[in-house]
Image (cartoon, rainbow, N blue to C red):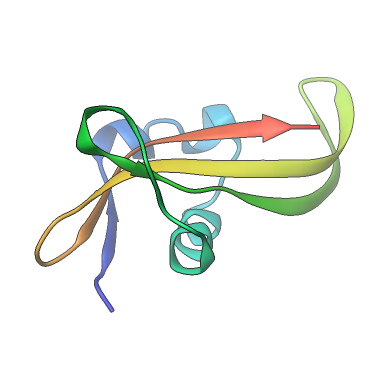
Length: 84
């Protein structure tokens, strides 16, 4: 199993977008990978949320990392988070 490393860009959005490194790792390890733009990959996973984000209550949080698979590691370029 390859290690997963978040780029500086992705790490810069942890608090702003509200995801955890553990959620990203769980999504990549358990998700179905699909092709994304520029030769990158993506997958997504829904997590129970049941909390307030930016003043509104949401039941679900979806984590969608964009990443590349390198020979020795998986590098997460960015992470999108959707609340619904």
